[in-house]
Image (cartoon, rainbow, N blue to C red; front, side, top):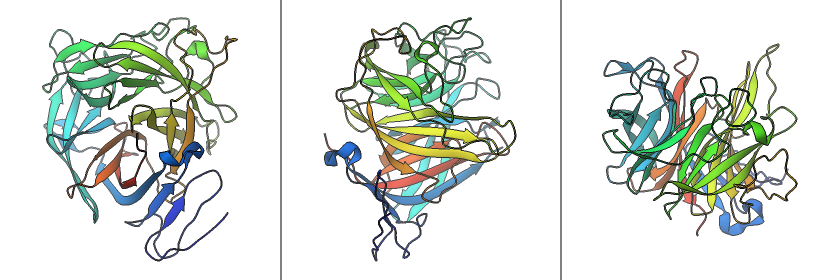
Length: 384
């Protein structure tokens, strides 16, 4: 490991070979800098982040008589300066909903997150969703409304979906589900339960990317301690809602074994975020019972990745497949943070106009977890 020392700030180069740090500022102090200069060996894709702090909303906080929590998606609305945050409550504690949040953030750090309003999502009939008929997991602002995704329910054979809603939560239209994604009773094809549509990103071009957390049944196993999982990312034409292509994202093996006997653990892709039309950030979120969460931010590049939309099964395929390229840009545990269940990620603007990256956690409405936000100032990022 190579080390060098800077007087002004902690400088941590997260790549496959070099990590640099300083004793002047701790890694989790405001102003600590983390840089990946050349992901995939591509220096035009370099990204540099400065840590701006953490803010927590405890489990049990009530808003308009409904428990706040389950934050699984986050996006910035430049028109208001606020953020949209979707809850993964399956209309059990309250109607399926999203929130408008105000994030008090500037160069001095992340000072607070407050709830501005709560909006109920509506089904195709204009009614709130009935209990357990929907599992909201992701939200983005698109050109004609609010794009949001439901993970579906593999056990109940409810298909995942991506829909467009108006600002008041009303149904506008639905994207076409590609072949092979709908759940099946015999688990021969389709989504795995609770490992489906977690990820949603909108590119500057208007294309929409939707990712599954782990491999479809026909594409191979979910991640284990010794092997990864082949997740699909669907690329949609945002205007028509029709699929254009599919790519393979290789989710890493589970990085940490459970520390409790027979404890559960997993790893999956819990969010994606478009930096431009071919580079995206991805959250790989793992859990190990008795240990907690590992959260790693990856950068991926879709350039030259194979369109696998015509390949019915990645596990039974003799064609050459090139997955997306990926490179780790941040490991929250490695820099000294103790992340919860991070499922939300957004670009945005601080109160002083600086571009920022915000992460948010899904507390699962559990008293042992919390709704946690992290903020980073973006010092530099890939240019198209």
